[in-house]
Length: 528
Image 1: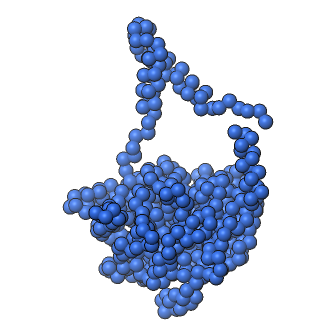
Image 2: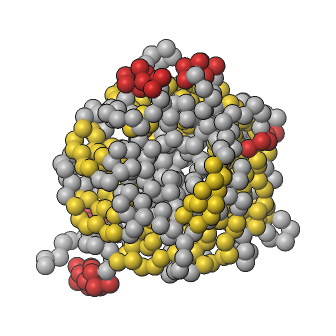
Image 3: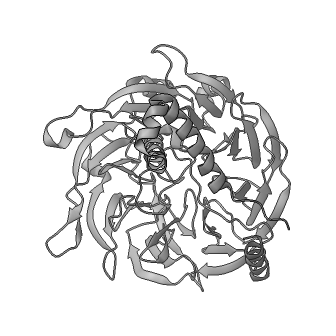
C-alpha cells in the first residue's frame, strides 16, 4: 500500500514557519540581520514550545481529563473502579475485533467461593459480582492484576499468565467492590470487605501485609449496614471512601518509607460525615442510606450517592492542611434526590456535568423517581435553589427496575445497562434514546468502551462486543463469548487483555486468537 509522509515532521515545519514569521513581525528585519538567521530560529522554536506547555491544574481533579487515564498518576494502568477521579476511564486496547480465546482461567481449577452471612441470611457466594472490576497496572516490568472476590480474598496475579505474584490476602468475608491501586507509585493496595473493614495493604515484599484498617463501627452515628463496597479514590495523599455504615470518610494517609525502606502509612481521619440528612429520612421513610457507590472528584468537589437516592457534593478546596490544624473543613455545596436507591457511581464529563444512574424499587417514593427518571444528567454549577436536572431517562416499566450499573461516556453517547436487560445508547446532550438492545438480565456489570468497542456481560454467561465506531447508530455485534455463570462484574481492559469475573467462580482472561494476533503484527510491520 502507498506510504504516507509522516505527519510529525510536517507539523514541526509548519510550527517553525509560523514561529519565524511571528518573530520577524515582532522584532523587525534589522533585529533579524544583526542576530544571525539559524540561531534566531532555534530560539524562536524553544519559546513557542514553552508557550504551548499546559500549566498545572490548580484543583483536585481536572474535569477536562474525563475519559483519559488518571491525570498525574505515576503508575500506568486501570487503577480503580472506572479508572480515574471522574470514573470515566475504562482501559487501553487493542480490543479483539474477532471472537477472543481464553488466555487463562483463575483459579485454574475449582472456584472462588465462600459462605457469607448478611442481615441474618447465610448463603454461598462464588466468583465475582457487582462491582468486581479487576485493576491492572505495570510494575517492575510486569503487568499485575489485583482484585477481590467472593472467596473473601484479595488476589495478586500476572495479567498475562494468571500465575500468582503474591499469596492471596484473606479477609473475614466476601469482597464485592473494586480495589484501588496507589496512583503515586507507593506499593499500596486499598480494599474494602464485608468483614466490616477497609484496609491499606503493602505489596512491596514477598507477601501482602495489612498496614492499617478502619472498622465500620469506628464511626458514630451509623445506619443500616457495615460492608465496604466503595472503591476508594486517592488524590494528594488523601483517601476518599464511603461505607455501608452510611458515613463518608476522608483520610490523610501520610504515606512514606521507614528507615528499612519499607512503605509506611500513618493515617488520620480528617473528615467524616453522615451520608443522610433529616429531609432524606423523612422522604424515604426508613434508614436505608448506605454508601455503596464510589466517590467521584470533579474540580474541587467530591460527589457520592447513597441507597436513599441522595447525591451530595462537598467542597474540598481547603482540605489540604486540615490534618495540621490549618485548611478548611469540607462543606456541602450540592444536593439532589433521585427518589430511589443509587448504588452506581456518579460519572463526570469534560464539562463537569454529572451522570447518575438510579434504581426503581421503592413504591413509596415513585412520585419522585417517576419525575426525575432512572438516568439523569445534572448540572452542578446552577445557582443555589435552581434545579440541576438537565434531562432524564426513565426505566420504570417494572419494579424492580432502573440501573445498578454505572454508565459509560464515549464521545457524545452515554451507554447504560438496566436491571431488566436493556443495553442503551443515550444522546449525551439531549437524553434521547438512540438505540436499545435486549440481553438476558439483570445487567449489573458496567458497560466498558475501548477502541470504539462496547463490552458487557449478561446474566446467561455470555460476554458481548459491539462496534460503536459510528456514534448514534445501533451498533452491530462483533462477537460473543460464552463463559458460563451470570456476569455481574465490570470487565477490565488493558493492552490486548480483557479480564472479567463471573458468578461461576472464576476470572477469565480473553485475548485475540493467536492467528489473528500474528496477522495483526505482520500487517503493522508491513505498514510501518
